[in-house]
Length: 258
Image 1 (cartoon, rainbow, N blue to C red):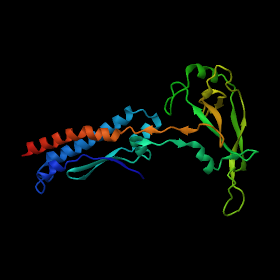
Image 2 (spheres, rainbow, N blue to C red):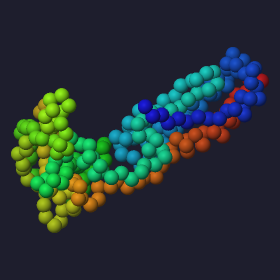
Image 3 (spheres, rainbow, N blue to C red):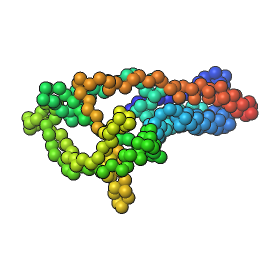
Image 4 (cartoon, helix red, strand yellow):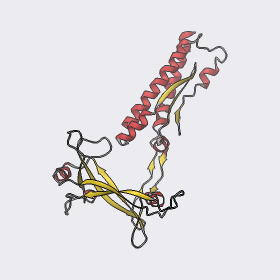
């Protein structure tokens, strides 16, 4: 699992008293290291919270930020969120069409071109936990649509042409069977929401709806490239801001002890 760490360089402070600085003799320094590590974690959490990331990613990143004492005068603050390195140092551009090479759910057209039908979920106003909500005027139209629903499942051959190693038969994948309701259409509907359908996902007496659009990604499709994103350097900024503060705190702890 990848780790991203913050450390504070105390070599100049500790070197001055190496061999005589112990927790028993310098308890204030030991306490200061703990306090700095705890505050560094808090600052890192706050930095992630302020960052321009979607809520699900913020929460996942923050959940992995931890601290611990390595010895009496050394602490580690780290995060092992799997996308921490990409967030901190930047993300390269990604061509989503590469999924056509690996996804078992790929289909093959009559002309032999591979494609995927990809559902996109759209959040309702006030429900921004996983991303930006649809505009109120779009929601007002979408919530009046007759509902679509999944009525069952069947199986179809994977468009990859892959075979099961044991049975030596073509691999199959599940495929939903739909009963279609209404969809958004018209010149006034932005492309992003064109064809949106309302799915009734009520459960346990609570009425709920999920709003989806379906898009086709094929080998011949234009776009489907996620642009590169620069690094946010959240951890680096927190560490650089903490460095001078920590040195002052540690020096003061030693001075007061002496």
